[in-house]
Length: 177
Image 1: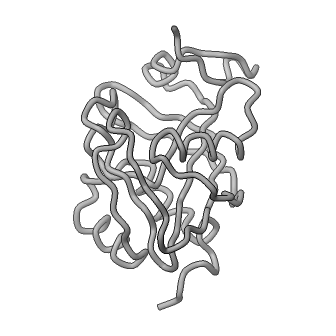
Image 2: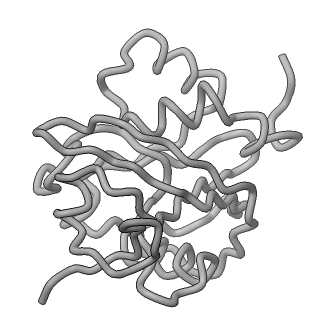
Image 3: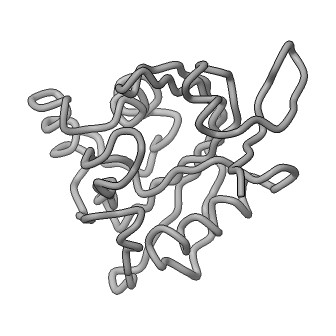
């Protein structure tokens, strides 16, 4: 079965095969979620079987919505599929657009609805090994420091979110200083 995603071709929203969108750098829809527990952010390390950015650290989860799927419903679905997380209510933070080389001749050109969800201390996280090889909680300050020191360990989109959009995504959810 072909994995189709909503994308813009000649200015019209249509269905495009996901790999084609990435090979050709076609502008397409996406959803990204950050889960926070207090001041800590849940990161995932992408499984080695992923066709782009395998083994790199990323935000809690990200995906492409199905045709006609509400972005919020997509965020909830993908939290469950990638990490076994249920019971959270992701809050829409912003829509942003970026274009980034993700290696292997592939380009992410995404129009992303970004969500933030708050987790209880005892949140159960059960990664799907086809999607995620590792997870960890990290403070925003420590994450910023790691990205500055070793940016190559992180996905291009996570670096973009942190350097260009952190105030809008996290805002008052992070302690200042």
